[in-house]
Amino acid sequence: MNVPPPFLVSFGITNKCNLSCKHCYSEATENGLPNELSTAEALGLISDLARWKVGLLVLDGGEPLCRDDVFDIVAAASGKGIVTGLGSNGTLIDTATARQMVKAGVQSVAISIDGANAETHDAFRGKSGAFDQAMEGISACKAAILPFQLGMVIRKQTVSQVPDMLRLAVESGAEAAEFFDLVLAGRAKRECLDDALEPDQRQEVMEWLAQAQVDCPILIRVPACPMYPVVLQEKDIRPKHIPMNVLRRIPYYGRGCAAGMPSGYITVLANGDVNPCMLLRVRLGNVREKSIIEIWQESPILAKLRSRELKGECGKCSHRLICAGCRGRAYEQTGDMLASDPGCWLVSMRKGTSR
Image (spheres, rainbow, N blue to C red):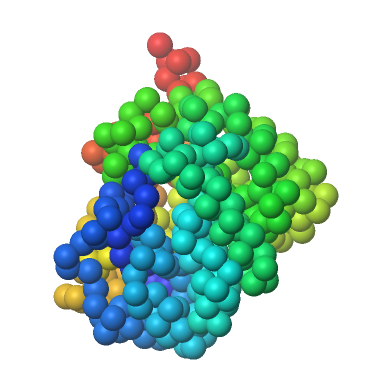
């Protein structure tokens, strides 16, 4: 069976980073990994992605701007017609770097802002002054006419700041606001144990964001929470400033968790390992040993994910096919990627009813 390729490929080109964020899913360090893909190997992967005709490539890390050949990789991808974005902490972006990104072919950059103020952001990112540097990076993108969005982690410490974080995204000139639902994977399992939202908190935040989208002038996306689009649909949210066809293209809308799914998502790590998602840290293979196309087509793990034969409450849920829960959170908290998503408020309510 020929499985359609993913729409989005996330390629963490390095594990090197100039920050030490508490939640880092890649567990990045200041030195990176000793066995990261070489330039030639990275360009070979890019050739496979071009032949595969993926819709979007996001280069991240670590901090991708810490890799010396980042613009060579960007230029190779954009030169082959791949829409290429960059995920950055923003601290290394000045006007010259932003212009270099544009010249190489970066079409959009996602800048991480993890709080409505410097105190909150800097404490989470592990460096004093990181917030101000990221905001300077945003200004540099604007000066270079480089489209950008803000990526913001939702956790217990920032729940009360979500309205201000959204306001910051709008006022900064971002094209979209991505609120990442914190999943306890990677370094977060050690440093953020008490930070992940409880199911009822998650429900409250998702319902607030859904309602905010009505009047919000930019698109709101929520990676790692497939329940959010269900809220949008159940509440029949119709934005005043965003076309419905654009809203329907947000992650998971009508399709559920995208990890390893046809027209969905896959992740390549700095050492060439392939995972279904940055949050679902299950090794599918390595692009040094087999092409990413072969891994995608032949992986028995991906076949299980695609079956949607979910267990427990997720398997019984009427939203099973259009939500499927976060497979990464299910795996990290239960050891079974097909288990019920412990973060879903619907699961929580059913369990409460059954007691």
